[in-house]
Image 1 (cartoon, rainbow, N blue to C red):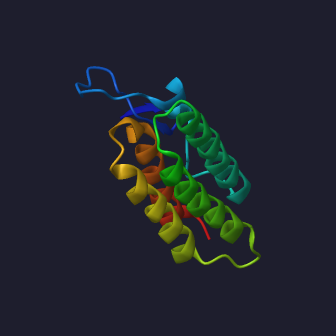
Image 2: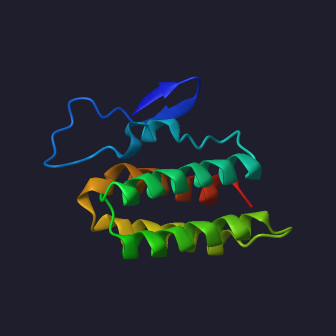
Image 3: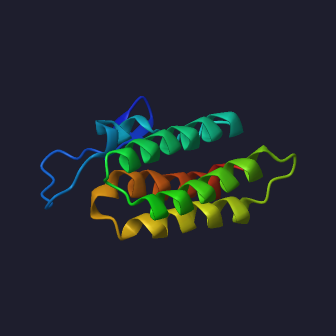
Length: 126
């Protein structure tokens, strides 16, 4: 992991894997930092939804899996927007989305971003 202006970035140089596709090429742009507010977290989750859409349209992620992952991410966003969101509910939805993608080798970048999103929610939000 490389630090840039106190924001964590995952350095994937010298990584050796078989048949991995870095979705949209810029998963490292999804940065969840401790100084974020709820609107920033929502924006980043919506960015993940756009990557998910791209991955689905290009055949990286099966349609059925994408529908379920999208549903969990959207439910997390809805919970975050509530006046008194339940942190565990947000984490559960993000974790469920992550578990659905873990079986899709080509979705490693999205899984990494979801893992980090769950960590940020646990540590800094709600």
